[in-house]
Length: 350
Ligand SMILES: NC(=O)c1ccc[n+]([C@@H]2O[C@H](COP(=O)([O-])OP(=O)(O)OC[C@H]3O[C@@H](n4cnc5c(N)ncnc54)[C@H](OP(=O)(O)O)[C@@H]3O)[C@@H](O)[C@H]2O)c1
Image 1 (cartoon, rainbow, N blue to C red):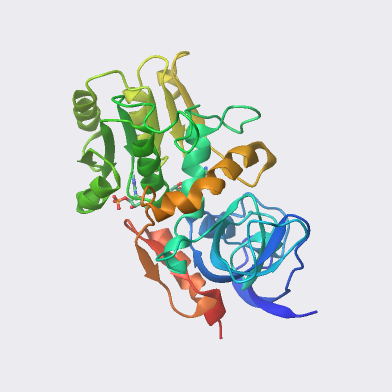
Image 2: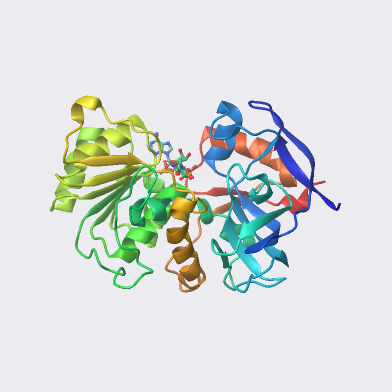
């Protein structure tokens, strides 16, 4: 059986180690992708360090995939060999993860990369975008965690639907935050208020934020300032950092009947909780059956949204040394990056 190189976590908590894996054969509705670029995400180091989410080892991690179609399975019509695509890997299904040279991908949650966009840029998009999309736009049927229940901007009647309604994105400069700002802009929200390091303000305004406030200001000051700018009740808050201070600020900002989506488990102080303000911890894997309909509807429109500039990739920092370069890069990500995606090239593995 032909082989490939893959980066493993051999046992729970064990360090990453380079090894080999088979090259998978695509089944119906699947295709094989030769991975040119993979974007690194906080979950990649957190799963290895904390032993969370997955139970099956040895494991291959990695979620963001950009590459070339190498083989197609039965019934696949949207892609052919040689197409440049982006897709979201599936945590826990090791033939569908990113830290290897080839992986399987689902046809319906993949999209062609538009001309003019590099593999590296495309690899910054999948997880951040899917996370925001599911939390904002899931229709609520069998949803995991919760949803803001908004109409997606790529569906009929969704574009601009929430015109002149205020919205807040806490920590807009991360990959999830940037995707959220762009989607909310397409939904029409205005003012679109975000918090970040002010060095990122210009870029976040380019993506669609109308106001960027210094995320290090005291919560009370941020709360007053944001409510002044909003000037109307705030019904939707997206906390793209999910720390206790951001979640409690987000919850304070919400008006009666409002909803806050948070990227991390609930950290709102119990004494703050009231019946008429909802908050939820998202689990936004579009490849899960519960999220698949939403994921497929977005991926069907994604190439066009990227091509016409509705959605822009994050800034890229390429890390050297192929799959092995992922190990120090995840350490760097753990220490914190600002408004940039670290991207590795699995084919450059020695
Ligand atoms: N639940 C899910 O389904 C799901 C899915 C994806 C991600 N996540 C989680 O979402 C979080 C963000 O992911 P990401 O990919 O967007 O990460 P990222 O790109 O690495 O986020 C980096 C940004 O975080 C900001 N930041 C750093 N420390 C902060 C703090 N103390 N308070 C507020 N913001 C801070 C920085 O903002 P400045 O540069 O402006 O300082 C930086 O730009 C991670 O915890 C990740 O695990 C959850």
